[in-house]
Structures are given as structure tokens and as C-alpha cells.
Length: 418
Image (cartoon, rainbow, N blue to C red; front, side, top):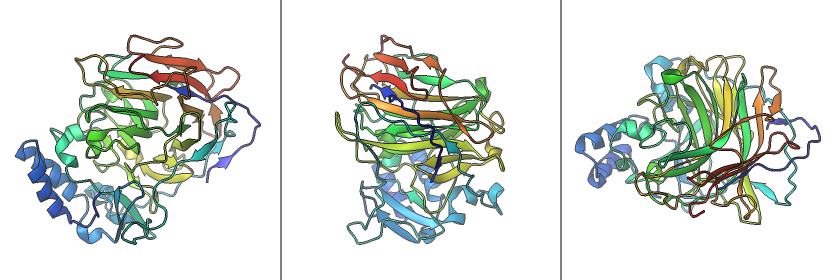
């Protein structure tokens, strides 16, 4: 568990607007995927071959279905996709970092009860299989039937969004809003309320996230994590899911991917599975369910680690990066949506689709960044992006950082019918 440094800080929250049984071997899944595909046979083969090669059926030592319907397969640590790459032969696993010392969790002033979100790994599934992986194995989410046919290429599947093009400010297609802290850091963290925003079409998404980044132009590099609803990435599922992403070349094709699908992340044994659904969802004017998420650069070996709710999920090796190999130049805490262009707003929400002051809006709080001594600092003087204190033409608003409560942002994301 993460160490808590008690400083007696009282704060106001950051507010945003806002299954198969897993038994089919990969070759059978590949054949089924070909039959279901709506892309070209060449693309079907490319994507199918890639996923079939990630690990073999013989590697699977246990499998189960989570409470939220994801099929999980447990494979030996050394058999995970990244460690099968030639350059990782003989790789010595990194020890998890010494837990950074955090500021005290903020005390809510709105009276909302906050409960940690569930991972869906409790008890046994409907077939009596324990919902946990054996010691020294890694949980891998198994793609659902029909999942891999939703992209026109493997590169498109790896991309942050199907038509991703980094932009400055909101546009009809790409909308985001949040805050950034320009400071050398060794990671950042935040506490996210879990919501399930409406997403109108499968190629759109809605997310809340943190990002540690550095570099510029084609050398921009980032490590990102948060929750999202992205139907096309998960066989049409509209569940809210935990995800990770990184790029070492400004989101260019082949420079990164979600959830280690391009084998660039080393996962710890026995942790939560990447891309699996979270729950329950927060309730308007009721209980809020949350997850605490951290990016953290190990000062000893230089790897970029992901921590979820006190558990070290795994790490991006230092060798993946140049611009952020030693530290990040800044951090961001924000929401983002992708809409299909050309028809104005769809009904896709950001956060939970509610503006602060108009109801119980989605939130991100406990925003902190880590400096070299591993102690955290609360975000206090950020730069706003997407507009501060206003609603722009795309219905996106930042409500403002509380001056009386550093680390807590009052932020509205998007209501599509505002």
C-alpha cells in the first residue's frame, strides 16, 4: 500500500463535467475472427497473427471470467508478450519502487461517501473457477470475439484514437480540458471517481486520465493512464475500463499502444488486468466509487511504473524513452473525448455529462506530482487548457482550481446538450 503522510489538509474535490468462457485456443479465435471480419483479409491476418503470437495456449495456467464479464488468462511472468521479444531475453525483472510518500487524501466537503472501485476479481466465476491468478503469473485480458475486426489496420488499433491527431484546444472532432503543471517530476497521481459516460458510436471514446510527458514535436513522449469508455477497442462494450498508454514519438503509427498490445510494458504477477472493466459506477447525489492511479519513475532503474490503488501494476522500461528517460517535464490531469466529425455534437459525454453547480458532476482530485526525494507536492498553480471558467463552443469548461485546497480542481467537462 502507498504510504500516507498526514498533514491535516482539508480540501474541496476536483469536479469534471462532464463473454465467453476463455477456453478457445488462439488459432480457433483467429479463424472465428476471419469469419466475422468486416475489414480486408490482409488486415484480418495481420491483426490475428499479431495476437496469436503474443502467447501460446500452452502458456495459460488458469483462466476465469471477472464479475464484469472479462475473460482473463493467467500466464507465467516470463511468458508475457514483452519478455518474449528478442531484446528482452534474459531480462531481470525490476523490483517495485519504494512507495512514494503522499500527501493526505483530501477530506470531502460535499458530504459524498467514497468507496474504492471493485476489480471484479472476487470469489469464483459461474464455472467455479477462482477469480485470481496463481503466484508468479500475469493476468491477460483475452480479446472478445469480433473485437479485432473493428480497425482498418493494426496501427489503427494501437493508436490513441482511430483518427488521432494532436491538437491545441478543442475542435469538433477532438475535445479535451484540464490542467497541467510544468515542473520536472518523477510521476504524478490523482483520484478518479468512476462513471460510465454515454458514448454514441463505437469509434468515439470518453476518458479521464493523467499524463507524465516531455519532449516536443515528433519527439514528444508520454506515459498515460486512467479510465475510459471506448467500444471499438473492446468488442463494442460500453463498460468503463482501466487502461494504460504510452508513446515515444508523438502518437505516430507504431510509437505506442493501449494496454501493452504492442508489447512495450512489463506487468507484475498477480495484479489487475490491463483493459478490464471497473465498477460499480458512482451514483448521482449518492455513493462515489473511485480509483487512485499513479505514474512513477523509479529513481534506481529509471523505469516508468503504473500504480493502481496501491498495487504496482508494472513498468515501461527506461529504454523505451529518450525525452522522459530521466524525468518528465510536466504532468496533466484531464478529460478527453473523440467525436465523429461532420455532424456537430453527438451524445458522447465527458465525465458524467453534468456541469458543476447543475448536479453531482464527475471529479478528479488528490492531484499530486513527485519530485526527486519521492515526496509529493499538491498541484497548486497549474496551466489551464481547454478554457478556464468558461464554456466554449464545444460545451467544454474548466471551472477552476480551488485556491483554498491545492491539489483539487473544480472542472467541468462536457454536457452534449448544453
